[in-house]
Structure formats: C-alpha cells, structure tokens
Length: 85
Image (cartoon, rainbow, N blue to C red; front, side, top):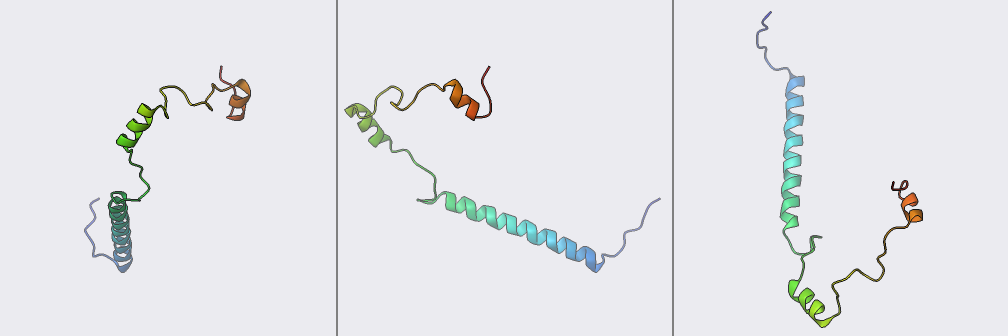
C-alpha cells in the first residue's frame, strides 16, 4: 500500500533540527582541530634533521641499539599478558 506524503509534524522538525545542529557541531569541531594541528606547538613533533645529523657525526648518537635496550625475558613477557610460544 502506498502512503501519501504527509505534512511534517513539529516533532519531526525538532528531530531534523537536532540532526542539523549535531552535524554543524561536528563540522566545527573537526575544522578547529585541523586548523590547530597546523600551528606551531600543537603537540606534533617535527624532526630537526640538521641537529640530528650533527649529533650522529659527533659520535653522540651511534648506529647501534641504546644501552638500556635488551631483548625481553620470559618474566617480562608474562607481565604483558602471557608468554610468547
């Protein structure tokens, strides 16, 4: 059976208004976040290649693993949720 299009009720208009306001709020939030992401000091780190190259060439940084690094022991892997087979 085909139903005729009826006139929108006030409740329907309120719901559509709520959807529109929600969509607008999300769009403004995303727009603000994207604008802030491009600014200096927004939390994104930028690598200073010149300073890194100088530290590598001076020997301050070496092409090897850090002194604190070691392969995980069995005890350490148990603490992370189980043993590795």
